[in-house]
Image (cartoon, rainbow, N blue to C red; front, side, top):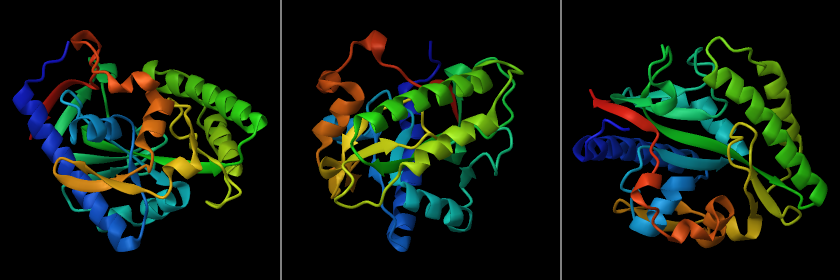
Length: 258
């Protein structure tokens, strides 16, 4: 059960929103593309802002822009944001990147009662996206590879002193990267890179691009061109229905505003 009051959650949401606004400005400055993803996109569609019980922001970037952002992030971000990668935070276990705020801390349910040594600011998740040819062979390879990465990730994240396989996991991530094609007419699907193995959605490139704008907390941000297609691929068509209270999942066990 969460220990978070609505007032604290809303303060955290606004801190995370500030990180999104700063990230958006950097992307405009350097001509980088990104879009709202997962629960953040769902919030934009359903509430024109955060899902009321949500406690993070999810973004996706074409893999080329994702890599460019990694190169410039540390020099562009303000002091209120920590750019979290496996290189900048040696105890961080995830493969994708996060923006962590220095203004509020979060304890996620999987971190409860554990000795966590990495930065635990409230966060923005950023995922790399690949474009690949639409073939049954590619789809099967994608699903199989994500399943293998997931098994390695669960060992390292949830088992104290577990036997991790970072080299094998990275090799699998690289294998997916090799499937990536240019963002042109000869590619017809968009997938998450192996850094984000929890979601194995398979989007139509022509329904994601070109991006459009949608309001989120009173500001317009980029979203997939066909949000219904995108959200259906992640959540099924049930995304249009508000879940009952007992199924409204949050990441956070606790949040503290600094």
